[in-house]
Length: 445
Image (tube, rainbow, N blue to C red; front, top):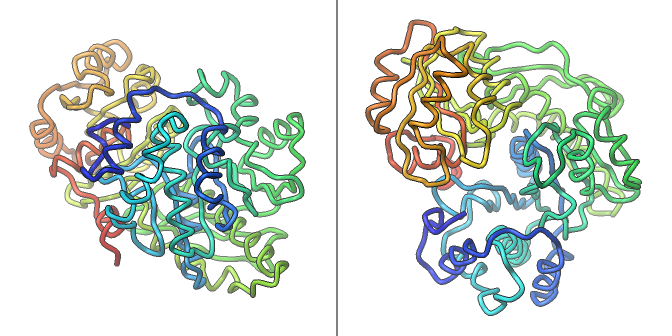
C-alpha cells in the first residue's frame, strides 16, 4: 500500500498512507499492544479466519454471503482494495463509509511507535469498527501467511485454509509444506480447521503441533456433477459427503470451475459456524439448502468477472502461477486466441506467469502503467519475446492497448485483463474498465 492507494484525504487515511514508508516487519506483538489499548475489540467479535494462497477471498466472500442470507449481521474484512480503501471492510451487503473507516483508522495515530504497517492498522480499525457496529460474526481474510498475520490475533470459532501454492516464498518458505505450516497456524486446538488440500495441510499442521479438529475437502465434503461454462451458464455442481444430510445442488456466480471447490469450503465453514452457535445456545441457523442460493449472487470483484459479452471481456486478478494456470485452463475451454492485457507486480518473477498464459494467447498487450510497483511494459515485452515467442506482443498506453485488444479479438475468443490486482485497480481507477460487482459492493444492491 502507498499514498496513491489511499483513496481519501481524511486524517485516518493519511495516517495509513504515512505508515507505508516504514517497511514491513512481521509479528503479532504490535497488533496485540494496540488492540489492548483499544479495549480488546477482538474479544467481542466472533470470527471465522480464512487463510490460503489462492481462493481465500472467494471463500470468505461466499461464506459472508451465506451468513448474511441466514439473517446475521456480518462483517467481512479482506484485502487488497482496488479503488477505495473502504472496500476492505463490509458490514452487511455493502462497504462501510469512508468517514467511518477514517475515524477508526485514526484511532492509532498517537501510537506511531506501536503500529508499523498499514495492514496492521487496518486490521485493528476493522475489529474496532465491527465491534462498534455490533456484528454477529466477522469473516476475516488473512493478508499474508497466517502465523504472523495481524488477523491471527483473533480467536476464531472456525478456521479455513484454502489452496496452497508457491507465493511469497521469501517470507513463507520455499516448499508447499512450509507454506502450509505458516497458514495452518490459523487453526485452534479442538476447533474446526477446514482444509482444501488435506494431503499437504493436515500433515504440516500436525508436525507443527496444531491440534485442530480437521475437516477435509474431498473427504468430509466433495463436488460432483460439475457443469456450466461460467459465462453463458453459471457453474453448478452437487455437494456430497458426511457433513451434509443429503446432496446439495449449488450454482456459483464466480467464473472458473475451481470456484465450486471454494463454494464447498464455504459451505463446510457455514455448517461449522451453525454447529458452534447452536452449541453456545445462540440459536439455529437455516439449513445449508436455504442459504446456498446466495452463492449465485456473490459480488466478489475482478475474480473471473465477465464485464462484456461482445466481445467477451474478463477481469481476473490472478497474480501467481497457480491462479494464472487456472485462468489459462478456463480460457482454453473457449479458444486459444485470446487478447491478454497483462500487468505484473515487480516483486514477482514474470517469466513463469507469461509461460502459464502463453498457450492461450494470440497477443500480449502490455500497457504502460502508472504504478512504480509494476514491471515496466518494455521489460515484459522482452520476456514475452524470450518465453512466449509464438505470441504477438504490443506496448502502448492503457487506452491504446484496450482499443487494440478489443479490435483484434477473434471470433469465439475475447479479451482477458489479468496479472495483478493492483494492475486491475489502476484500470478501474482510470475509468477505462468498470466492475459492476465492485459498484454493487460499494453502493449496495
